[in-house]
Every structure is written in structure tokens, then in C-alpha cells.
Length: 379
Image 1 (cartoon, rainbow, N blue to C red):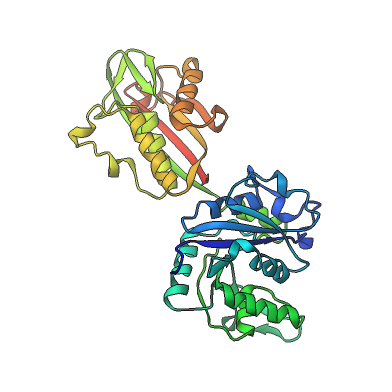
Image 2 (cartoon, one colour; image 1 turned 90 degrees about the vertical axis):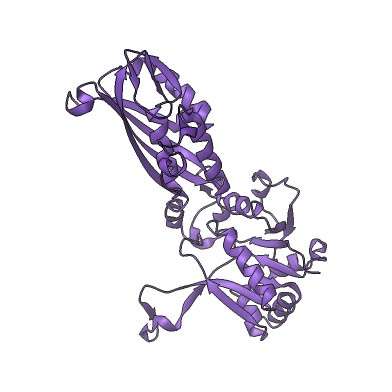
């Protein structure tokens, strides 16, 4: 019976000479995590990955410092002098005895998709393939040192993760190693031994970190940005809610819900960053169920939505626009409230206030508006 789960081999024994740093590229910081921590975290979030074998160099002094080191799904094994030898060592490990299929993924390719991994595994089994890998077409002109410009349509780039039948990739790598054949990736070894291999369209943001400037490039893919804007009219009252904090004043908010204009703007920015739509799609202002709704529940809903997507809030930047009440005396209380509602530290929340210079509906103390920018990142 075919297992629904698979192990993943992560070759990480290289020193990354082209990265030009004292620290191997897989241990370089990518935001708060190292490159390999980011990669392994995504693999651990997969619903089909049961074990992860990480191949490291004999004298690796960084692996024990990684946040996944003690995870029960992880096994650290000795790598080889080449990628092929490292993967071959892992294939011979007793942990893989009960598996018929295995995936191999680059440690320095942290922006892959678990969805793509799942679909490749299904295709491999359903079509009885020996191997499958993602690829992308070339877009730049391609030149040869010997013959100049060549037809780029005849070439494409292979990526990882690659999923293989375990017995097939074991045989293929053994053949190449025994004959001193250089193996750039697993699909090459399978094709060289005439096994049945197919490819699927990959993702351009699935970048392999090779040079130092790749760190800056891939960081741009690890965050998602959304903006939100909301405006509510004033009416006579005894106070307004901003970010869950009640400010006593001579106004109240005209609204269907509790009128927390800050949380409404924030919700729209979160939904925008996650490409889920806007607040009105989920909380209609014509639905009686939402009458007087506590806006913190809207934020709870947004946080659950992005968590399901494997995302979390990296930071928010909020601008409150009003003539009155004065915001600065309440700034610390609003920050504390937002920190609690968003479940993030206050140092990730930018909060400032401005006026509209006595212009328009806001300038005439008839309304208040909030503009918000939110950055999301992978969990």
C-alpha cells in the first residue's frame, strides 16, 4: 500500500563558495530565521512530509544552533563531498526503509510551495513515474561562450523539490557515482539511467540562493503588503473606539458595527495583503447579525484566515486623521490594545496621527479616517 506521506532529503553539506561569505549560505539570516530554518519550517508545515533527513558536512558547527534541530521529524546525517553523494547517503539510511517514494529539496531554496509538492507527488504515483520536477522557461537572452546567442526556447531551468521513486533514484545515483559522472540534480541521474521522468510548471519566485544579492531578492517574495482606508462620520456622543481603546470625548461614531474605524482600516489592509478581498465581503453593513459587532472579532477572523495561508503579521503602520479628539495622549493605550488584539509586539506597530488642516469633512470635525499599511510574511 502506498503511503500518503513521504520523507524529504535536504542536501546541506555544501560551503556555497559563490556566496562569498564565512558562513555557508544555508545558515545566513533571512529576516528572523536562517535560510535553512525558513526552508525546513515550510517542509514541517506540509501535510505529506513525515520525515526530513538533512545532510550536513562532517565538521558542520552551525546545524545544532538551528531552531528545528530537536524536532522529532528531523534526522541529521553525514553528507558527502558532492550533492549526489549526500543524497545517496540519505537514501541508504534506515529511516527510509518503509518508504517507496522520496522528495529531494535544496536547503537554499526557501520559497517553494507545499501545494506544488503535493501535486507532483500525486502525479508521480498516478502516472507511475520514476521522477518528477518543477521547471521554468528562460526569459533572458541565452548566450554560449563558444557560439554566442542561442535559441532560449530550446532550454529551461529545473528546480526542486523533485519527487522520485526511491528504488529508481537509488539505482540512478549509484550508476552515476560508480562511473564518476557529475550529477547536477536528481532528474539528470534518472534520465541518464533511462528512467521515466516528467516535469511540471514551477514558480519563478522559487529562487535558489546562490549569490549574496539573492538574499535581498528573495526577501521581497517573503512579505506581502496591503493597504486599508476607512472613514466614519461623527455624531454627538460620549466617546469613540480606536484600536479597541475607548477615548472619552463629545463624539460617537455613525456605524453599523461598533464603529472602530482603526480596526476596520486594519482589517482591510490584512485582507488586501492576503488577496482575500475586503471587510464588506465577510461582514456586510446591511446584515443585522453584524449590528453593533465588536470589531476585534473582525480582526480575529482575519488572523485565522491568514494563519490558514501560512502567513502572519510582520508589521503594521497606522495613520489616524482627525481634528479632534487629540490622539497623542492616548497613543500608548491604543498601542497596548492593538498589541493584544493582533497578538504581536508593540514594536511591530507604527501609530501616528495627523489632521486635515481644517479642510473638508474631517477638518470640520464631522468625521475621522484611518489609513493602514500591513506587511505579512510566511510563518
